[in-house]
Length: 100
Image 1 (cartoon, rainbow, N blue to C red):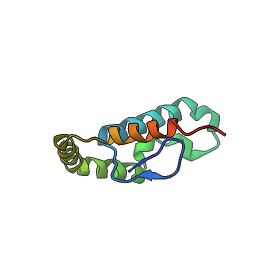
Image 2: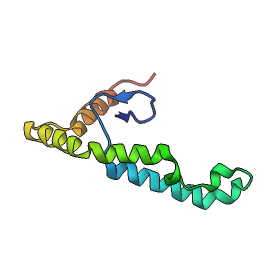
Image 3: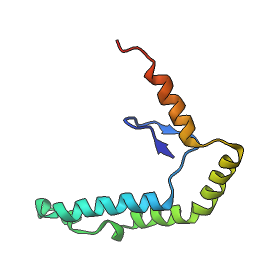
Image 4: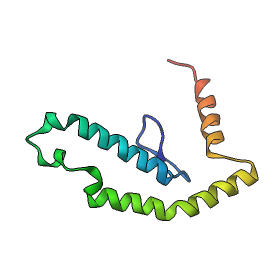
């Protein structure tokens, strides 16, 4: 499930692909690597993210669910809907709410 931007609520029926999860993990690992010198006293900051069993499990789970996610996305496309249209409609509706 995806989170709405700037909120902690999730968008029902949404999910992330394995490539997105791998990209986010790589970005976080890059940040950790480039800033590890700031946290020399913390041993956890010196350990690569992908050596953590929780990260590996999460990535493995996303890889396992990828065929189902793709099939669901193709079904939505066949019907003529996509999650992007829902988000656009919501943001369009919100943009007309007057600011107080």
